[in-house]
Image (cartoon, rainbow over all chains, first blue to last red):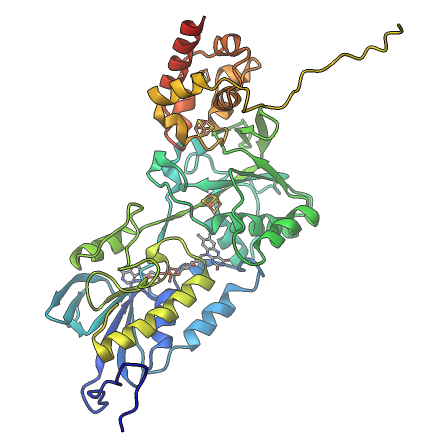
Length: 361
Length: 110
Ligand SMILES: Cc1cc2nc3c(=O)[nH]c(=O)nc-3n(C[C@H](O)[C@H](O)[C@H](O)COP(=O)(O)OP(=O)(O)OC[C@H]3O[C@@H](n4cnc5c(N)ncnc54)[C@H](O)[C@@H]3O)c2cc1C
Ligand code: SF4
Ligand code: SF4
Ligand code: SF4
């Protein structure tokens, strides 16, 4: 008697002596590496393509992670170790063209033999918003305006936070929603993780510089996930961070390179101005031009926000309108690591099913 | 009778049931972007007039939304039409047109 799985018979053509099917994963961040690690490497040929010299993506730049503040390296190592030895990792590789013919994909990399595969995963992540586009905040004009990415780098390298003049800052402003929720820069969406990143970084500055006063300027504090609200609570209770509900209107430089910032304190209903030694801009996620280029070559759809669209936001959030092309991680929009890893594992299951049964949805 | 100095205070709460929201409905019909305000205060933070006199454009238009139009006429006279508020609004509210329309509404009501 044949074994029955519900109404579905197990596929009879499952035959491991056939040539292995090949999966090409583009992007070696947390998302791409997790997919590579979750796929059975004895059943498939897995190739991971990363444009940078080292894999890791954005997480490789972060120091400690919200909300627990465990070192980012721990998570990165875990994900890297999850990949079997026979996963082929090509770093420093740029894709020149990619096209689909019948059910096969052909990728041309810079100066190498083309690669042919049965499935393609786009795990190319996101770019950070270029803060220079918000000229009124003075990034790239005033030296004491830095981004959350740069602050992470300072923490990561174990450096001391100083002003551009080498002084210990006495007062720092943390500015939320830079490049997000702002139709002036064309990004209506919320970047989801910058609120909690801002709270985390405020605490970390206080740990480093206990005397420094910190003021966060926000429109809404989006503490949506487990232990985020608790981190906000800790920031107030233990560290005395000041939260002011008002979006930064403008920033100007004083003689001596301190900054004067203007906003409305909407909870008191008064315009507010104050002098700070530096401001940290919590820059948001933007879709990367590279992703858009690859998406065009594969005829993939993008949402109004510019991030890639899956077949169905609820039921098929990893497949696309093109059979054999899958999406995973922040390529679909702002996401934290927990969500990215869960998403990548779901992607691996979808690909496996597709390559065994031909069902892409 | 001894005067203890107490008077009966008018209820200070915003009474949406009693308030006259005709002005806001008129404004919304002429400037629908007014619906998009998320109350961030950027307009007030940058307002030229608000840094010199007691004037808060965000507060004025938020109160108006609730049907509170007391002292609207004197408040709106403080605006200098510089348009800076519109430049910084993250929701693209057409504040210049909104302010002009508020002024027209005031003229019509008298
Ligand atoms: C300031 C900041 C702090 C953060 N802190 C945390 C935190 O503490 N905890 C947390 O959970 N999340 C945090 N995040 C979110 C976290 O960074 C993302 O969840 C994560 O990076 C998503 O991983 P990803 O692999 O989808 O994308 P990415 O990290 O962007 O990785 C994409 C990879 O693809 C590569 N790539 C791109 N295009 C190509 C191409 N054409 N060819 C080949 N390779 C390509 C890139 O080089 C990169 O290696 C933070 C985000 C920001 C902005
Ligand atoms: S997460 Fe917070 S800071 Fe980031 S865009 Fe959303 S509301 Fe703004
Ligand atoms: S137009 Fe009026 S309300 Fe707007 S910033 Fe100028 S003075 Fe202020
Ligand atoms: S700047 Fe725009 S969104 Fe913000 S309070 Fe003013 S009108 Fe509303």
